[in-house]
Amino acid sequence: MKKNTIFFLILITFLGALVTFIYFNFSKKPLEKEKIIKEEFSFENSQIQEIYQKAIEAEGKIKKDKMDYEAYLEAGLAWKSLGDQTQNKIFYQKSKEIYQKQTEVFPNFWVPWWNLANLEKNLGEYSEAKNSFKKAIEISPGEGMIYLGLIELYRYNFNKSESEIIAVYEEALKRVFENINVIVSYASYLYEIDKKEEALKYYQMVFEKYPETSHIKEEIEKIKKEIRGY
Image 1: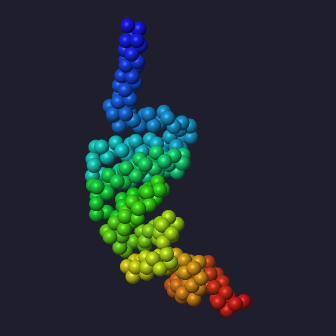
Image 2: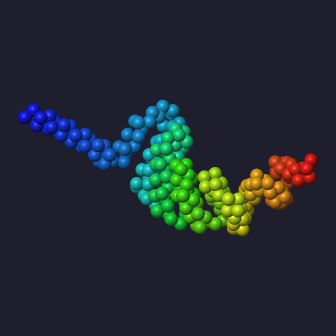
Image 3: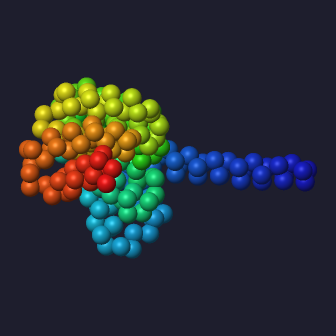
């Protein structure tokens, strides 16, 4: 009889814990879940509190109108800013979820894919980030910053070969209009891999168009001296 009583008490305790778990994890409304997040993380800094409020308000706009393009950007940026401020990945994850939803609602807009790629990279999801960068390029092949994002991913997270990285640069140079940032980045990369003559050619290309850029002129003079050997 005593053993039955003990078993019954254990069973009641287990069922109580199970009900509590289900309640807090499955029955909470979205705003209640946000309250739990706010209580878990101490937002003593007024700036952080303000960013958090912006995130909640922007998500409210999305709930009212899922076609509110700007609201996704506002919410995604706010959650990412909280991640930057607190260095807690839970906020990067929430930002990623917002941008994922935006790519579903606006699949032919490159900016959501670009934002999603950067969040995936922050979270260490490198294969997913690569696919998102490539999708953004497919949608808008004339945006230089997308190629630079993909190149950075290839260099530092995939350790791609020089030939593979150069191939992306060359594709960008063919397709990007007003590609000064791409040219400067390419020149810098060529210099890093000891292709100084080629680097010089691209730096000179930039300087011809923008002669007021003193730092480019300094790079040109430095490389010329290194090529001459003095």
